[in-house]
Amino acid sequence: MTIAVGERVPETGFMTMTSEGPRPVASADLFAGRKVALFSVPGAFTPTCSAKHLPGYVDKADAIRARGVDEIVCTAVNDAFVMGAWGVSAGADGKVSMLADGNGDFVRALGLEMDARGAGMGVRGQRFSMLIEDGVATRLNVEEPREYKVSSAEHLLGQL
Image (tube, rainbow, N blue to C red):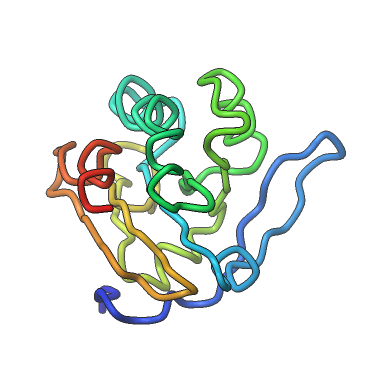
């Protein structure tokens, strides 16, 4: 079942790339007492994700933070090495935190996984954005398949 607005975000873990290598990030620590704008993409370095989705949040990071958001997070079912390299290539450092959901635990717990095996990508996360306030989903924007509208930085910025 898909998470609904007003529900607590399930506790799972992510991985982030640091100069010392991959480091775990607990969702409970990430979301507790904070306002987090999170967006999920089907995969790092994929066309729409690299040309529009991540760049939109990088470009709008200051405006989003100006509306009271403590952190902007990009997640995908990729490993921390890929997410780290993608963040570097997109200029996300200091603007968007790149968190790997390598096993898909987060998107599965949210009920937002998708089967992309037909495209050779395995099970991935759907394209979505959400606003999480003190661990509770206060906004949830899930895209229709092959769409990019409601999960954009512009759309989420309009909801803040």
